[in-house]
Image 1 (cartoon, rainbow, N blue to C red):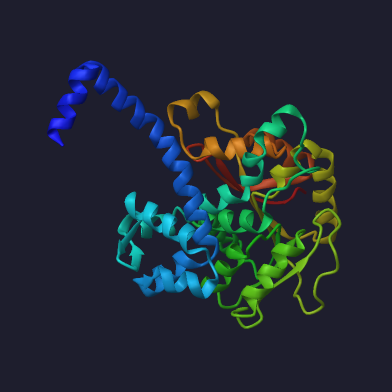
Image 2 (spheres, rainbow, N blue to C red):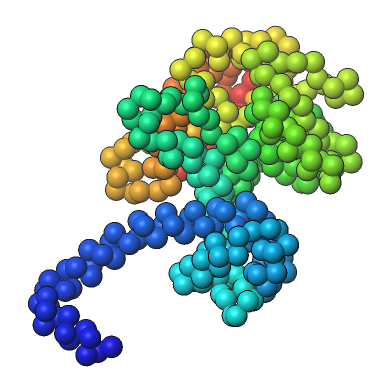
Length: 348
């Protein structure tokens, strides 16, 4: 091997050989990220990685045969993920490495959210030239929006909002755009007397939620229904009076329709005049700051621009709440992650 390296150096020259290797590694980081993500997506969505996490080493060949998978394709993915250190393969046995377990745990929401917006990324050439438009020709994968967002929100938004809700001594919580119910489930876990109900516009998302509730509905304290927050349906007859309305990362999707948002808030005030509101929302970060601190907000901003969503500043949210007749009784703004949290009530 050393002899081969010396031959290459004599052929190319030391400076050129070093430069080529450095540039190759730079390009490879992007290629490998894409290839690894695609392989990880595929095995994650089909439950193989979760099985490895739960059971430890398994025979990849036997698993693939039981699932009816193409053995050559599966072998290629296993070999590749073993080569980059996310899986460890020993003959036919394969297991997660420590880096693989990390990727499957806390950063999992990032991977799932990326998959949710993959239709936009896959169709970028046609979107750029106008042959396809978001909403008309393609959509994000809404279930994975809920799953990815839910996992990521457990890192900061949900703990902050739950503390705000409990601080208001809420007994019955109505969550708008409830996604995968992770926020409400967390409330039910920490408060054995609270009653929670979620509304989501997506029948697909609500069906996913009902499948989860069939396993655990917290003694009937957690329920969900399909509903449009702009035209709120009748709530379950056995639901106690709502004293807290929550929403996390729900309203920014309608910032381009601010009058519609204002009318929604006014309708909620009329229907639930004494309820408090606990709202978490994205707050716009300065592009110059993000360039110096390239956090995951860069990808988040890209996803939103591709899917015709806007992100408001903290001042913009304060203005909307004020116009809607709501007064802020508590707030927390985290510029580092571009998120804000507001507790509100109807202004006198």
